[in-house]
Image (cartoon, rainbow, N blue to C red):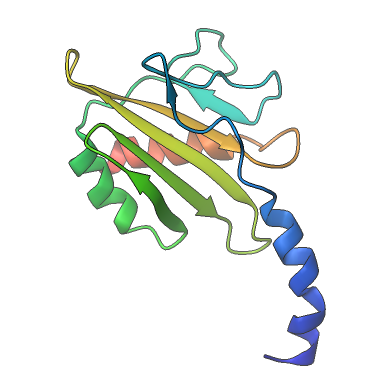
Length: 134
């Protein structure tokens, strides 16, 4: 690795942040979004955080996610998938969860930035891009 890239390594890993402690399913739901505008969830009802569930199975979503270079599937079960998305330029990490609901045949989603206050709509854009590819 070049010397200039080595000098940037501590900064780039700092952009990743620590994995959140509230990842996973609790009482059949994904965690609520924080008050900051850097999160969207199909379990939220306010305009800033609300996003529609995906009309797809986890297998269909997994095929789309696996085609994305910035995605890394961290955990997966029959009804849940946790994916880390890492930005190419600065190495920021967003945590994205998918929870399949067999009763409605939809997959709920929560996408949140680990760091910062605003994501400039990046989490919403990502989920809508996945929706378009389904």
